[in-house]
Image (cartoon, rainbow, N blue to C red; front, top):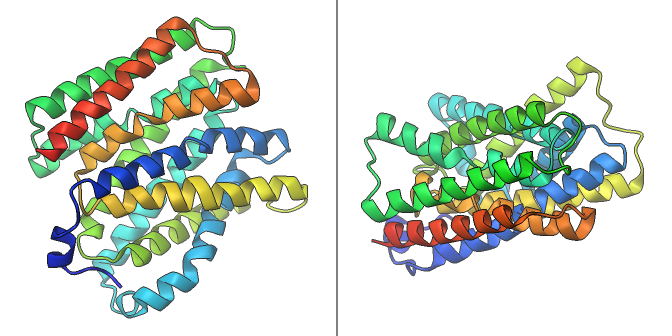
Length: 304
């Protein structure tokens, strides 16, 4: 069951950071598994639908058992906000996974994780949250690392068939994930984690299912290996990775979580080098180092 405010306040200060680290590691496999699924013939829209749909189905018994009473008492406002979060989450995965068809893993993940910038701007204007000096420095350094990765990758021959389109889709995915984080932060203040995750993932999968029907994108007829990869995406990057972020929304700011997501290009690029021989240049390595240092500074600022 959901912890009370007193119990939540008694959590060790380091626990949210550890949970976010585990979530970041799981999410770093997302781009790799998506590429593998595309290689097995799964359309990007199908991949997004299966990832969220399977995750919602897996967590259904837990959500109904632990938070059934909360779901039955859901207000209209909460239901509408959850649908909004699911809508933006669906758009995030639809655009980002499609971007992997056109550009490299490094560029796609570097751009889709620029939500730090958009969340920080929106948090300032919507909620009046002003980052401290250390947090602000971490943001600047982390974004500088992202831009270095993108610029270096744009000069490389690794990029896909239409890098401009792929990079634009990744940025749109970042805008959508930013909106999802901001809405989720409001909802998580009053909704237990199982209830929120089930509602968000479930509504997102319904939006994607409707998109598949509208576009004529099939969900069946693929190999067993393709469906196993989709299941792996649901269990790893989605349930373990994104749920870690959702849990942390109640304990750290949305801006800091956006900073942590900037570490995804580091893990994804390293895995892409292992699985797809997508090498990275010296400037990308410097960018990865800046990303990690920026995240460290932001963590110090959040701790204060």
